[in-house]
Length: 283
Image (cartoon, rainbow, N blue to C red):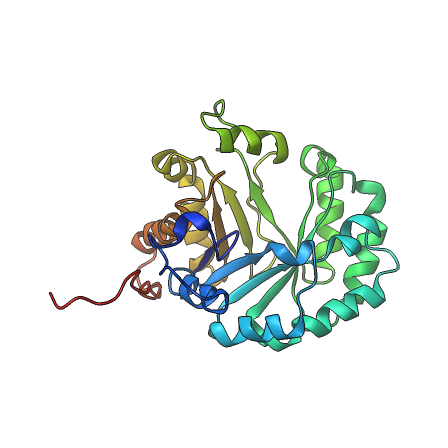
């Protein structure tokens, strides 16, 4: 059994020289990160489609079973709202094709204004995604969480094409008032929605946002360690991303989450050993 865990990015200033070697060439940073975690969120693809050369370098730096959750460009999800997107989608898929099996899922993150009246557009879009490509959909409209009728309608749309509903958990972030500048900023930007932990497919995806305090972050994910352990026992293959407002300790926390699940599920495949941050010593 294998659990994939990761962070929102693979390069962070606060990790340099402490968690990852420094200096490190830009085209080696993902390789170093991949010694800590075996998955990563591809948030940058939301803002700009990478060059083919850049994507090839990503493939060269990671093993075939490393997982990318690639966010679809905002031009597709937010500007065109999934309509008239065949051309942009094809262009995006052509660029990321060198990643091969590393593209664990296309991440369809939708704006909060994308509600029940837009389900037809979502269904049509998902049916146009080429077979063999997995999708995970993140919705933020309150109706999908507060009205069982619309929750079930969305599940029906997703289940029809084997798509997952991304679990985006901000309950720990909003449990108590913010205590840092990064937490205060997160409070203004992150959605405040009920936690949802129902898996629709064999490949559930969880995005958990904790606090800048390491212990509070770990206390807040207790629900997820048990849920993920149960998914693994059921034969599912989950991917869990650990965030904090400042992300300073995110790789450490991702590995800690993996360790805690390992105590519940004996036989879970271990993560690789992180690369040293400095040159080897004689003693």
